[in-house]
Amino acid sequence: MFRSERQYVSQVILFLYCSFTVFVLGYLVWNSFRTKKDVLTNTIGWPKEWSLQAYIDIFKEDHFQFNIFSSVIILVGAIVLIILLSSMVAYGLGIYKFRFRQGIMLYFLLGLMFPMQLGIVPIFLIIKNMGLMNSVWGVMLVMAAGISTPVLMLTHFFAKSPRALYESAKIDGAGEWKIFWRIMFPLASPIIVSLCIVISVGIWNNFFVPLVLLQNDNVKTIPLAIMKYTSNIMMNMDSALASSVLATIPILIAFFFLSDRIIEGVATGGVKE
Image (cartoon, rainbow, N blue to C red; front, side, top):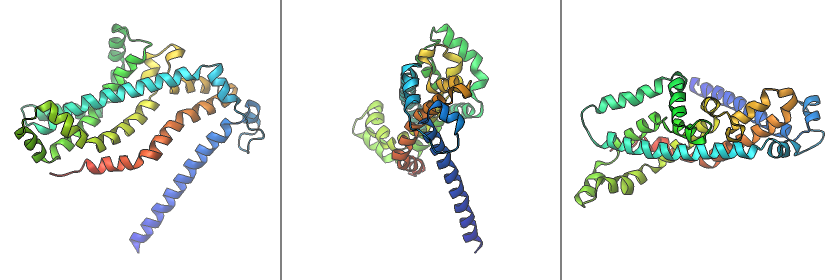
């Protein structure tokens, strides 16, 4: 009886949380189709007049397409670098037993314990000396340095993957590079897809690093563009709402279509030999 009551309470809490989330998203969307005057005078009620003017303005006057382009370039480039680097590092740590292996694992574990903000001054100086200030490439490199979580998850996967696959490939004369790309990397594809989705959300929504490294409006990312509108919210509420909707849509679409892959990746990460 006690167990069923706990399940009932959990379901009620989950329902309330989902209802609140749907209401907030709905409020965001329907207010983005208001005129500026309607947003300020009729914030809670149903729109008196549906309008796309807010979306037209942010693209025509504020060149929001440049912000989208910058965010996409940073996201794609950082994800590619993170997956390539972390998978190769994790392959070596997971397959081979060597001296200082535990020390290297501890190094990546420490990367999860300290926020990036602690090292923002040396990061700023390094990017400045490399001539990558006000460049999406500088932000991309900083984002790509966050490989601690992928390395630890993939190391666990490779360490627990069937050893017979590796040994059979070695007997057949396959080299390490071929074993990695042809066998182990495809085998880890479920967890890699899961990592891509989770990491993409963090990179897409990252505010702090672009704020420090990007000053030119034409290369700023979407979160920085939204901040520009929210800094004077009463004058730019319609633009802030429209840009927020455009920033949220890609994440919702990705999660809607790929949520099963996240669960599959987590389950695959627990594979045993």
